[in-house]
Length: 114
Image (cartoon, one colour):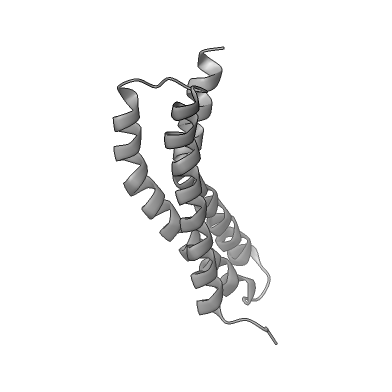
């Protein structure tokens, strides 16, 4: 018997992913340029414009993949379960890349100017 419902897992992961995205926005696109750690110049507006849909979509993908993983873990073992698990994990990592897009771009800018 599970002590959690699928809806609670999905809601918790959605809130966590949105919180992580907001922190990545603040640190990667506001704090680093303000402190002079990176100097993106005119690219900052493009990064910010792209980070909004990527962050929101990534958060939704993370929440859906966690629900997908919870549902697929209750299936009987076999090749279908392995494939479902692999797809759920892959989509979760893809969503995480969307959520962390601002930090990824800030790190690329930082390391390209070393």
